[in-house]
Length: 576
Image 1 (cartoon, rainbow, N blue to C red):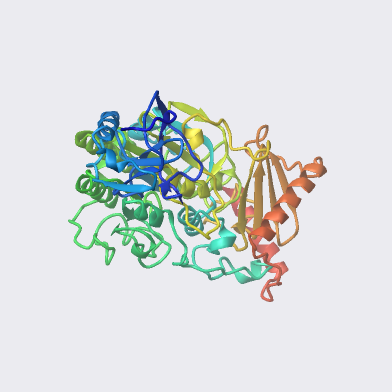
Image 2: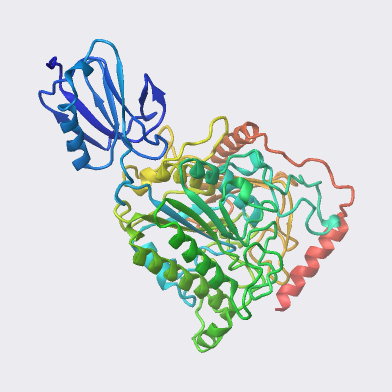
């Protein structure tokens, strides 16, 4: 009845490309392997599941001359299928290829369902603004617990020192020269007589032709939502989101943190006295509850802690009574941070009650350094808007039950890495014909790699800012000059070395971050070979990304007025 052939290998793999009528993974990653000894099958038999290839893992039976593919989930179903093989009538087995359609199995158990993903993305949240990173005044017990049970990245970076470009890079997986959002808006910043060059305006809306990771996760069967600050267009829905709560082109909370919220979507009827951070956390819980049976991705992009620095009223008394820290002491900021943390705790409780916490990945990130007048990133130099470490190094952790072990890593990562990471976690495909600049972090999460070195060397991280960003009022002690937090520049970090190139003057700054985390000493003159190597690599990158380099003189620039303004600000600072 049966012709005997060689053993049958059973591979548990994820779906990928189609080859020879068989669904295979593009780079076959075998998660488990079984061998059935003495299997008996006729040649050229193919069982093709009628299931949804883009959503479910499969089991692939490989015989000596034919392939059997079955959409599978659990071991007991594997045994059931093996039994079915012996119940198929003998006339099925023939010399010609035969395709047998099998019915869909029902949804998998939670252990094999694609994980839910929560990305908490804060605004202007500094590297040390959580307790687990070293704040001595702000309180973040919920975030601390997630971080301590997960993997903390102490060398995580945003792709930009301010909001819009950082978010564009996060969503597109591309560095700023590719999407060309360089600043918040396209108009020049700061006084014209102080700008030596014509800035590169770039664009202010993310090109809708760009496929975001939200698009890719949607295609993989995820329900997607964005809640809070969007900042890249008038409406995030065309960029791959099923639900938008509060997202517009605005860079801050609609009318502050208390109602009314104007025309912010799904925030129009906010009750009096409701703090918008609390509302977004409540909306997150509603979304999770409504989608608990299916994979979901929530981009919880809080307005907090962007200006206005507006306290949550119920918490003011607590922090006014608390002893100020040596690093942090801003009462209003402390209440804003606690509101975020309390909301995270509420979301985790919801996940636990629904029984889906173990199948939910939580990531925590920020769009740039902290707000200079209200917080401090010490020992880092700088703050939001500067390309020193305090402006671009930000907190990041991942908590993934059963996958990520409690740990800490110093491996440098950057915002463009989030795109391929989300795709790999979800099983979503990367888009065809779209350049991505990041690397997936999943191998780090799983402990399979200790670093992301390329060809045996640390990979380079890049920043490009061909514009100007004016100073805060009264705060300019951690920037290169008192008029601008940043002037046009590019920067590169590779290993422990970081180089910044300034386009106005051609000046170069080089820092050894291992021995000088605070970037106090420019060692460019004493390390010419390192400067040459990093400059060469940065120029190649600028060419590859078609980075716009400002070079046209600004006809309104007045050197005398610039010098007078610098002198005046420095004198005012000395009197404080």
